[in-house]
Length: 459
Image (cartoon, rainbow, N blue to C red; front, side, top):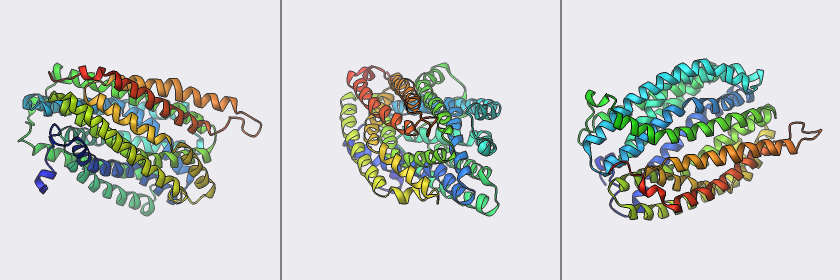
């Protein structure tokens, strides 16, 4: 494979399914790891140079920021599915209009998020009972991220479009450049200039703007695949409507997840700064363990989209089996490494032995759940790529709202004692593990029923 071919769109409708999936997944996995470094480096830098309270502030801000991103996430998810199917169908006009409409929708979504976010951040932090010791840091961190949301939104949109056309290598290269910038600016702004959590947020936004610009340049040069002209930026009901129809269920899924995280964050806050900080560490490590699952899930979304567009459903089923098996093995290996070396990994975030030990024990509790999540992510990716975004949404609704949140609060309530007036903090992670296991079972049932086979966007 030549360098030119490596950076070109990939047709996933031919060749061995497992090989196409692996070649697409590996660069995306590396890219997702690099993306996870954004928040992880933020946590490491503030934890080491500012303190545990600053670490807790960055973590507490995460669920609120994710909630504000759901509108864009919906547009991005719909765009990825449409691009994959039009690319698989070899429909240049449809592909061009889909991409143009997505660019315009992203601009509108970014403006809405900036306005809403500016008014909601402080009230949400107060409503969640954020400790006074970290609330100002949380507010500062979130305001910077929201004001720079356009860079973040366009980065995810453009890389989503590239992935839909099978190009995961370009997104990786641009992300690695941005990650290096982010790490360098984190250290300069925090360790050098003493800007604290404001500095890490500013570094993140600058890095993501660089990624967005590089991704746009790449798309602009792909004139052999589609046309990027002003006339295609005009909103058309067929394309914008279909993008939203496909994307809103994914956006709602993210909103449900983020809202649940906010509700659980309120419970987490009741256990004090130590548990808050431990939860931040666990979620950062969790982000890395989940990367193979997310990467295979996104790869299978593109794979399914292209093959559904090309009317090759038998090939979709074949790829689902092979991709899920690859994800299961990869997830098991990475989880085993984290369990074996957990003490050293947790020690990257803090020097406090109590935090390291608590984080390690809770990560061991969650370990088996990552294998179940491999099934959920892969089969959900197949259904989304085929155009069925509703089924994964309902599964997320059930596992998060009907299982995770009530179970967390239920365990907390029934484990109250004189020593633990708010209940056992174990409720945070036991409820998460149970929801993962049940979610995998329901997802498999939804996939096996086969309703996704009749949801193609491109006829």
